[in-house]
Length: 303
Ligand SMILES: Nc1ncnc2c1ncn2[C@@H]1O[C@H](COP(=O)(O)OP(=O)(O)OP(=O)(O)O)[C@@H](O)[C@H]1O
Image (cartoon, rainbow, N blue to C red; front, side, top):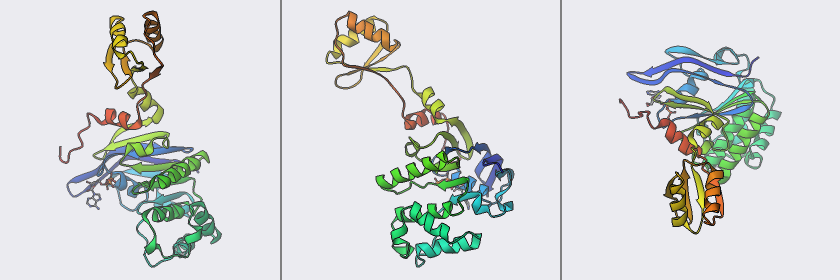
């Protein structure tokens, strides 16, 4: 069975509001695909359609080549965490997972394995009502991992987590992809996916905005600016603009230069006797690349 999730021409409206509008993308194995868009962009609706929790008005969502609801033992194919708070507060963590495992025909030993994997083994017999948001997210992730599936979906797993929790999820997602699994993770904050996602599917108002490798997006957003570190800022700006560069003060001890390659900048400064301590290319952050990408997309309601 192929380990890809394929969404084709997916469409879903609620009354007159179009939540997902002719959406097409794929989620490949062995990488983390970030599913990004502002609040209300249609991410959760899309994930619900993939899982068969809602019916599309048009289009298809296939999991390993088949609709999720037609899979035998679906949790062995695709694991998902959509709403980590949807567990009865009186239920103990281990009992919750045992119930899930039983319903899915999975062995009870998987419950202890996933509790260990997500770091909840020591609180396995505690009621979920006393869990922090981070612990609930971990429990939700444990549920997704229960069937040891080759495909995984996580809806906003980083929401409300402390930096330690964010780091943990980031490493988990990377390791799941490194094992060859297809991992789809949604977020409304691009910065959260920095150092995590290999590929991005960006949506706005239900429509596809971009489907691109992260590297390609970053390269396109990183321009030819070079940052020069020097104590003689004024002199550096004078000689570099005379040499044809566009210069700007880049803050204390820094000049931002564009229009000249780094080697030429170094040669001009050296030739004119202007000392400098560093030259570095400007590399865009994922957040900057996202702003660039979505600058012309109108997200306003009813726009
Ligand atoms: N059951 C529903 N009934 C009516 N409207 C809905 C329903 N579910 C979603 N919507 C609407 O569809 C649009 C997309 O919502 P969705 O939750 O999919 O977005 P999202 O990208 O996941 O946003 P968030 O990051 O806030 O979760 C929104 O305008 C939302 O109000």
